[in-house]
Amino acid sequence: MTTDTNTNTSTSAASDAESNDTKTTPADASTQQAVLEADSVDHDYGTVSVLEDVSTTVDTGTVTALIGPNGSGKTTLLRVLAGLLEPTSGSVSYRGDAAARRIGYLPQQPAFRPGFSVLETLRFYSSLVGADEAETDAMDRLETVGLADAASRPVEALSGGMTRLVGIAQATIGDPPIIVLDEPASGLDPGMSSHVFDVASELAADGTAVLLSSHDLALVDRTADDVAVLDNGQILHQDSPANIQAALEVDSLRAVYEESVAAEAGTVRVQGVTDE
Image (cartoon, rainbow, N blue to C red; front, side, top):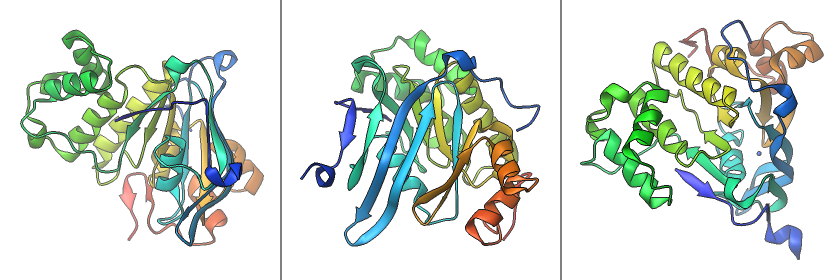
């Protein structure tokens, strides 16, 4: 899914009246710049406040990861930043020219039109968003996510992991400068989860700003250039994993999580194992 922002800043009506050696080297730091910025964003569902005074930036050529417990507001923040929800107050700004203000978005549970092959799905979506990419372009996108051999497979016959990868390939159509991935590894086996994060890292290395959420702290630590810790609708910390660990005087991202949300990390995955 790709969203298209019609103005350079999305502002609510209320203001007018959310590492290690395997990490892929990101784009050169000298070329990195903030491509998305949230300023004092709140979002309410009726009388329920989900996001409160959230300010954050996302840079080109980096992977930014949101971590936090269930119900902390991660999905709402991603949807606000992707332009799918209007903030109750505050603003979201997108840098760059008008042609660059399209955002690729992968929801937690991507769904595709049945009866189409993987390749036909990408070609169909391309026509919907006005990209009209050639078949060779669609195959290149499948090659990027490792699904070129599945191009002719019906989408309804795909595994959960393959469905997520098709969703990522679809999100890159039109080459948006920002790609938002909501829990891209949720429910996947460790090997497929690792591959999904590798794809995210490769997209960032090519200059895309990748914003994702995850409970898999090992993969986040391995992949993310920047981590935002979200709890009760507020960002408690945002920096590189190493810098956050140093600031809190802990030695792991799991310890950061436990220290920040004052709870045991019972719903997060570490080294591919989920603690129940």
